[in-house]
Image 1 (cartoon, rainbow, N blue to C red):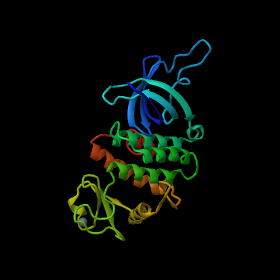
Image 2: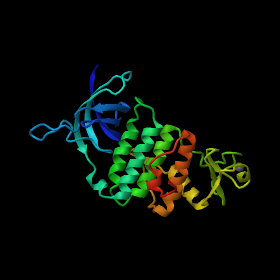
Image 3: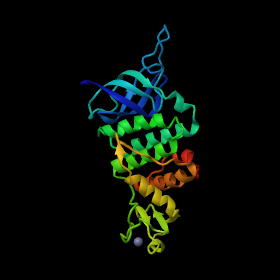
Image 4: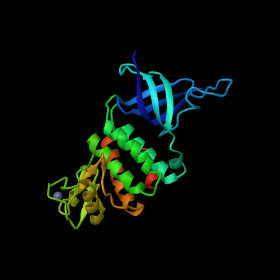
Length: 257
Ligand SMILES: [Zn+2]
């Protein structure tokens, strides 16, 4: 089985036995893959360990692993930590958003399906989440994940009648219908919730912004007051489409457990 090198971000990890970890990695050139890091917690007498004492969620590293999509859990043979995101880990809001971003990537993409640009965006956003641009940086990344995976809900026209929702004074959202609903149709979508029409306009505006180096340029400054309702709406949409609950939204948007 050929050994390959790739830059990876750790999306999920399960401690496996006393010394090993099962990791879901997002590899820049190879997409999502699951590997086993045998001996990750085993130390030599000199105190060294094979993977610097274990790999943590969101760690970015240069990895070497045997690559065979047909084989379940190939071993990780080398891991050189490039960025442990120490600054991000000191901010609770930032780390939750980072973990939620990782959860979305791991749930919405198939294994062994490379998404180089999205990988670069995740690496970039993990840096941004450590600073005070985190709300808008996360929202822009979330939009990229939804668009790239085909999970972006309909936000410009009514998901039922097709009328434009640009400039609408009232707007509703239905996860079951997969998008925004106009005032005429809302009565026929039992699961709809009203959304602030100004927030919808802002979201439509962000989607239309030009991009530079893969990221959305000139993002407005956003607060949680603005991003919580949008993150909630997207989480409902993804959960409805997948038919599964996500783990991180309860920490990110503070909703029911
Ligand atoms: Zn309609």
